[in-house]
Length: 113
Length: 113
Image 1 (cartoon, rainbow over the protein chains, first blue to last red):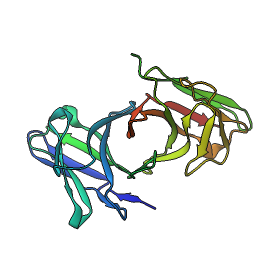
Image 2 (tube, chains in turn orange, cyan):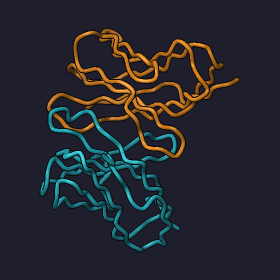
Image 3 (cartoon, rainbow over the protein chains, first blue to last red):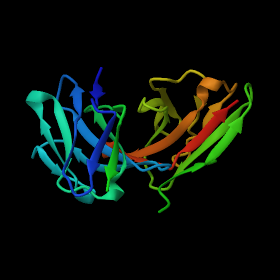
C-alpha cells in the first residue's frame, strides 16, 4: 500500500523568504502526486499535480514542486512567501488505475513579519 | 458552478443520535468521496463511490454508511454517534478522465458530546 510522509509538522518562514516543504512517498510504481493547501476553516484546494513528463511542475499562487524518483520525494517550493500563504499543506499520492488518494498528515506553515 | 457543496457546516450531536451529512456536486463527476480530518492526522478516506449505485469502503468505514442514488448526491449517514466521530468531514468529487484530481467541499464540523 502507498504511504506519504511529511516530516515537518510546523514550519515558520519570514515573509519574503523562500520556502520548501518536504514530502516523501512510498509506492512501487510511478505515482500520481499532489499538493493541496487548506486555509483555516476551509476545504482543500489543489495547488499542483504530477502525473508524468517534466519532473518540475508549476502550480497556482507561484508554487512549484519537483518529483525526484531516486529520493521518492515531491517537495513543494516557493521563492518568496507572502503572509497569505500561511495555511496547512498536504501532500498526497494516487495510484494508476485506482480512484483514491492517500494523504500525508500535513505541514502547518506560519509566516512571520 | 457551485462545485461541491456540503450541509450542514456545523453540528452538535449527542451520543447515540443519528444524522446525515449531505454532499452534492454539479460538475457531473462520476467519483465521489468522504473523508474525515482529525488534528495532526491528515485526511482518512471513509467511503467512496465510482458512480450511482456503486460504493466502496475506504480506510475508516466503521460507524458510517453511504448511498449513491444519483450522480449528484452522496450522503454520509452516522447511525449511532460516538465521541470518536467528532471530526471535520470533507466530501470530494473527481472526473472520470482524471480520477486522481479531486475537488473538495468546504467541510462539515461535527461535535459529538
